[in-house]
Image 1 (tube, helix red, strand yellow):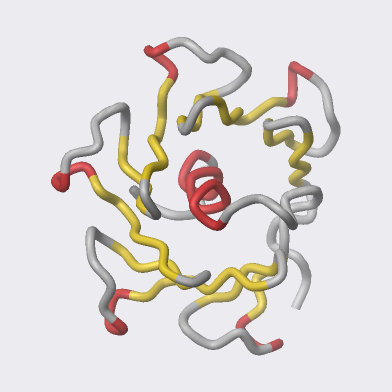
Image 2: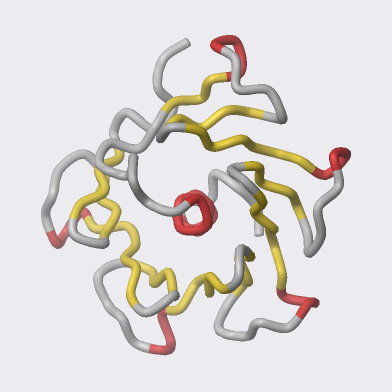
Length: 132
């Protein structure tokens, strides 16, 4: 299987389409927030990352919790449940479901290998790979 994210590059806190250029910036991370494009204004906040959770928008209330991350495992919603696991992130690789096997490998985002799983999930939400 090819890399589903082969055209994405993460560098200096931002996610780019294809190449590092301000005109190709899809999202950026600053102070626990994932912003749309190159702007870091409050009106461009897509997701907030806090305490192993990804929240839609700027609010960290339980009703805005999209994903919970625990030990590289990504669960839909505000709590850990094996039936809610959608992804596994391990060693910079992104896998569908709960098994980190070659048949479940979706790929990786170039440059995001050391990025915390919560931020990887926030970026995947920002590019609509994961639905919030």
